[in-house]
Amino acid sequence: MGRNVVVSALQFACTDDVDTNVDTAERLVRDAHKQGANIVLIQELFEGYYFCQAQREDYIQRAKPYKDHPTILRMQELAKELGVVIPVSFFEEANNAHYNSIAIIDADGSDIGIYRKSHIPDGPGYQEKFYFNPGDTGFKVFQTKFAKIGVAICWDQWFPEAARAMALQGAEILFYPTAIGSEPQDQGLDSRDHWKRVMQGHAGANLVGFCILKKEVIETEHGNSEITFYGNSFIAGPTGEIVAAADDKHEAVLVAQFDLDKIKSQRHCWGVFRDRRPELYKVLLTFDGTNPIV
Image (cartoon, rainbow, N blue to C red; front, side, top):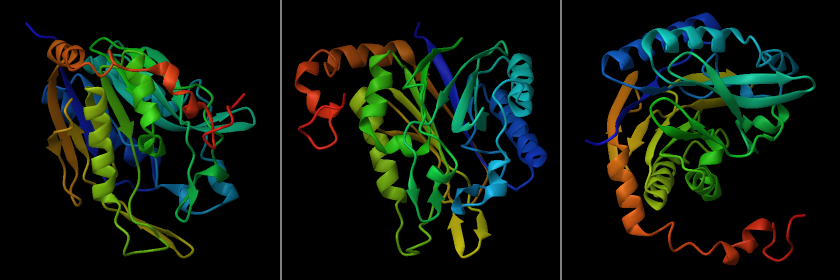
């Protein structure tokens, strides 16, 4: 008998009202549970619009402390009721620091820790450096009831080091809640397929299950900035194959089952971790390929 786990990725259009969005998230988590899901991933910063399009002082007031965060508390109750694992994305205030964070809620409703987004982008439409400090948790793996999981956030997904770091720590499934879409400075630029191929590569290179999502098509505007989030959430298997996918227009509850024992056997037989040469990778500890970071 294999060790099977069912994962789900939710995709929905956000309003800019917290209660409405959390209600939607709960409804879809319940739907995923009815379809047999054990671990349910909600999208990045789902409590409201993706506010990082603009640098506005009032948006910083959306941050709340990790302790007694109302959305996390509500998701703890839901996780305990349904017996599911829920990673919960939130805008964290920690004294004078602010982070793009995610709390991992186990199937008994317990909060087993947080991850703070490591790579913070800065560009037209995605001005996250105005709001978020670089995460200080490092890449982490969480032992949940159903699987040992790694969770990173959005821009982290473009860095192969993040996926490999979590896999080296024993992650069996990687989760990447995400909010990304069109580029305000160039409406002709569509990174969707590039993004999907990079994520599939992470899954295949590390032979792990892979669950990633984006917000459904929505349009928000602050000044002259407008982003259309292009949906296309998907779940990939250990060879990079897409096993479930959404479109770019509709709310979705994606579900896929992985046999973790089978994946483990494939990973060991393939030899990608056996044949690693960590002593040759010191260049990765530099910015310019020559000078180590102290």
